[in-house]
Image (cartoon, rainbow, N blue to C red; front, side, top):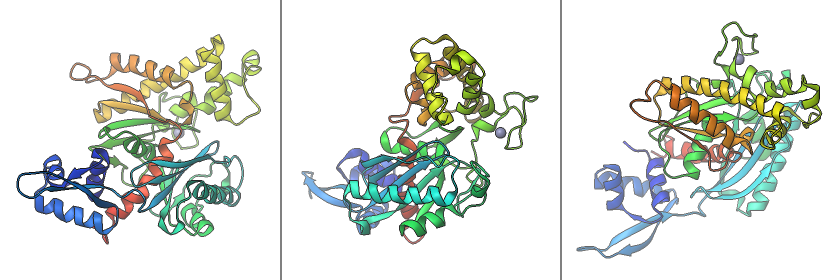
Length: 387
Ligand SMILES: [Zn+2]
């Protein structure tokens, strides 16, 4: 049966809608829908916005109460970060770039994130008592329930750091963590009302993936599924920090492509090598777009390998849409989209049954932060106290 979140999403997508239309759209009985709507009204997320004539009693229309509460979403990895404030309708009220953690300690990075949250809430001018919490989208491995990172990246102090607890203490707001690629999938749902089943290929500091099936994220047993960057594309390849060999991220991710660029003295002179690997990667992408041959070859290497791994992803899940998200797809995203489309058209197992559409997210940079914010509202709607 559809969750309260699904009913809320439907009201959001329709703008204003009657209980009868909601029941018809979901297949729920009128009595069940009346119960769900009563819950949403009780949470002050939905209100009556008017009536339309009908045989007998006029139908009362429902709409989202956009000013009822707000959520903060933060995406960060070692090289980049974005923060947003989102209302119940999914509208982004404020956005800021975060100073990337880089090689700094968790304590320093979290102080920066807390300051960004303060500035975001100031920008959005929303009452603090109506802020439900902060969703934090970041890389893995992670213990989502405990709010802990389980990796020594980018520095050993991050291993086991209680990220959710320390940010909550620094801001006075509840904090939940989420895998960044999964968060991007949830964000794409928020930013485009039509997306119910699709795969996300996420590329920022590293490569990841997420799956949304029938509107629900697939997280795996411990929320560490779909680690596309750590599937092997060469069984005899170099060992990776994750424990596997020949990982996709080590041959196609931004860090790997920048390493290859720096090994070419002429190309190295033409990219922003003083910057972090993601900024340097973006400059390689721009050089390729301007016709630089060496940069074009490196980007082609990355797209080809990512495409082969995406064929595996599609073959495993038999999915009809692949959506690209993450800051690495800024500028160069259309090149990746077109290259992946060409390879998928030729190589996916189920191509004689259906095609697979490759698209760019509505906002490749914002998607994960918007999704992290949306997770906070979904957590409220899915909590046993609410349902
Ligand atoms: Zn690996």
